[in-house]
Image 1: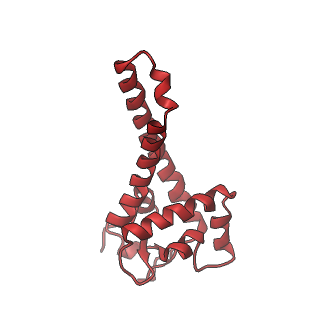
Image 2: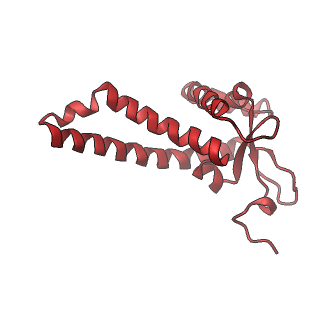
Amino acid sequence: MCPLSHAQPMIAGLGRRLGALFYDSLLVGSLLVLVATIAVVGQGMLSDQAPAAVTGTWFRLALLGTLCAYFIGFWHRAGQTPGMRAWGLYLNAVDGSPPSLVRSAVRLAAATPALLCLGAGYWWLLFDRRGCWQDRLSGTHMLCLPRVLRSDTPTK
């Protein structure tokens, strides 16, 4: 939970991270359905073998590319995905700079096993407040932006 009175950002907690991850999973899922639809319709227009479009290597690479472009692109360009923005989170490097493309790619590569190991990489945050596996391996911090610093909250 982000305290409203603090002007300094703090390391994001597990609840906010999972909330942002859920929100982003809905958006990424929608994008993947769109890419799959385009692939199947496009393949069906070119031949009678539309189901072959979903079993090929190019199809899998298109889905993986969409997933990588979403996370790496948003982290590098804006420091936050739409889900992170909704939950008041942002990402930066340990030195305070925006995450580079390499750091963003390493973060995504580390986040995959962290999530697939029954979320062990995320549960790690309950025991070590310095960050999850992907935070430590990529040299980034996911910070909780206090409401007084959010651009979408009107100031008085």
